[in-house]
Image (cartoon, rainbow, N blue to C red; front, side, top):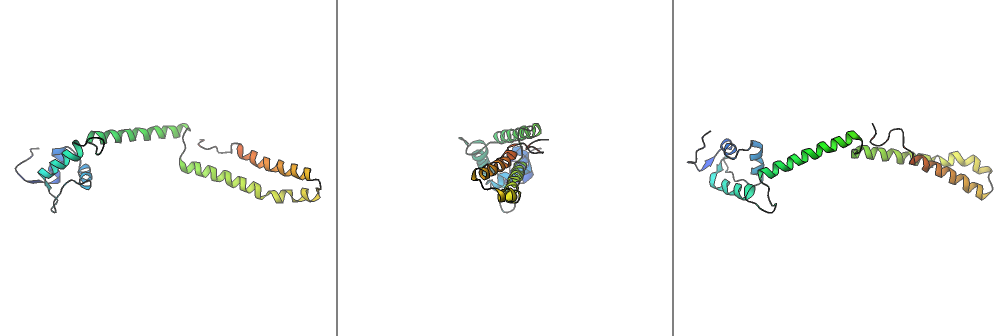
Length: 159
């Protein structure tokens, strides 16, 4: 496509062709401040200066050029793929799965402690020795805690 420099403004198609970017990238640039007039045309000189300052010429990480943006996108895509592989291998779990696991374990502990009075009321009613009472309570509490330390039927992250 031959681009004409004899006009003061270009349309979006001319801009995407000249800068070799997609319409989506051009729209992102507009949101970031690329000059555009009320009729949707792009003033050439102002756009070039904006592009030079914001896309190409910025130093010290204040703004990224197109190559750096592509590199960041590629790194993020690779990281996501790595994380998916870790989930499949079982070495990484989703937050929701982890929360569900721990809520279930806390509910099990709660239920174990709440049922203690019902389970122990008859044996305790006939006991008079405080050491025996203490030992029975200790044994039951440790049993509940020991059950929590054992892997449940569906382990976290397990398949």
